[in-house]
Amino acid sequence: MSLSAAMQIGRTALSASQLGIATTGNNMANAATPGYRRQIATLSPMRGAGGGLAGSVGMGVAVSDIRRQVSVSLENRARGALSDEHAALARQNILGAIETTLGELGDNDLSSQLSSFFNAWSERANLVQSSAVVVQEGKSLSSYVQRLRSDLVSQKTAINQELATTSSRANDLLDQIATMNQSISQTEGGASTANTLRDQRDSLIEELSTLMDVTVIERGGSVDILVGSAPVVLGGSSRGVTMTRTSDGATRLATRDDGSILSPTSGAIGSLIAERDGSVDRSIDAIDALASQLIFQVNKIHSTSIGDSWLRATTGSLAMPTADRSLALNDPANSTLAGLPFAPTNGGFTINVRNAATGTVNSVRIDVDLDGITAAGLPGTSDDTSADDLRAAIGGIAGMSASFAPDGSLRLSAQAGFEFSFSDDSSGALATLGLNGYFTGTNAVDIGVSSTLDSNPSLLGVGTWNDGALIENGGALAMAGLESKGIDALNGRTLLGAWRDHVIVTASESSAAETESIATSVVRESLDGQRAAVSGVSLDEEAINLLNFQQQYQAGARIIEVARQLMETLMSVV
Image (cartoon, rainbow, N blue to C red; front, side, top):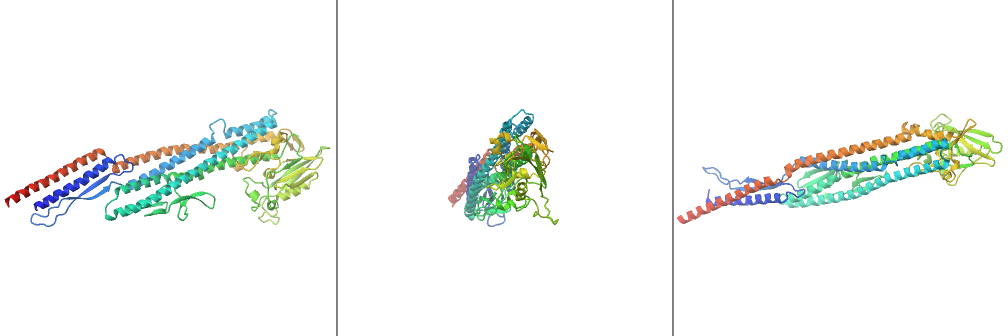
């Protein structure tokens, strides 16, 4: 080997050492930089040219690559843990907010309102409270139910607003990742590795993972991003994401370019969608179901009860368009009845018409045929009872008149010298139509106390007419007993029991969500620790590397110096 070759070897040692020192210095400078992955200069011996008796001697050292220390599998697991952690946190926040909204641990909760309402009826039956107090309790309960539902709907609205914000951020991140793919591909076209750009892209993907669970597939210098099986980034092209309204009226995450629906199962977006459509909607449905059955069950009792005086007129609260009045109450085409959360059944009711002058009472049974079988014995509703049939049947009773009000509600009135009441309704038709009802509305949106009772509490149905005899507190006792009555529509539970079951389930889910949030944080922290062991910068280790490269540099310089001295000696001999 010539002396010039030795000098060349020394030069390669100097160059490699310089790159090694620069790489180590860069690691040390970025030791606290978020998202930075430790870089390593890979040294490789340079092959010598020629052979000879002594064999081939290398031509020094070269830096073959400066590459980030990254474990692909560990990175994927860490991204998944990050998605799960933010999903659990979002779930915990939503369930905690629902639990606070329901507020069943306080003194002014729905359970207390229901108990107070039924206690007022019990005290009215014992003549402790006035009818006016019972009406006010109903108004207070109605207002509370409406306000509770409104608070839950506001929470759903807030979630939708948060989804709009987070999906917009996710869209920006996808665009940036696609742009970064282009930059990395261009930079690495000359075979060098764009470590800094890759770190920046990984940071973008990590932030994206907090919003939704993604699958990352590397193809050369670019990465493809998938949500489920749907690609959202393909190389340098981003399909983008946005919140869109589907045909069923729900808002869903979709691709920006063609509106394909995406279904993230984790991350903040996945959890927000799941809890909005899950726990929040369940709470809204629960308060609606409670309000619907409260309206229906209370009205079933009140419709057959009598106030301080018999009725002279009553107008139902259910408005029906002309087309629905002649359709059977159980006809699926009857849009008014089909959209109700409760419905009448096969049975009937009795209308008692009293002559005010003589006191004689004529009790007439009105059959409500809703068996879904025609006169020919075939399935169908053509022969079943319609609202118009009820109008005709009641209007045909001596002393009674029946018609439809301008808004389509059924109106009954007694002719001069007569008054009337109802009893023994096994069909629920009176409560469905809202005749002589206590509550108005169909669910928690519009529940309210009848304006007739509000303006004249003496019409409150306290008594009942039973087998020709007046039971003065029969209606109030039946209403008080409703508190402990199992209801078929609530799976045999009481009104209060059904609501408390929902509250207990919500509290249990909230507690589980808190535990899950802690557990996912522990998992994420553990994976962060493992990732730091692979990709993180250890200042102690880098200090050792710096010392090694320094010594290598000094050795390379010494080789050059020795070769120079030998060269000078040789030249002096010549």
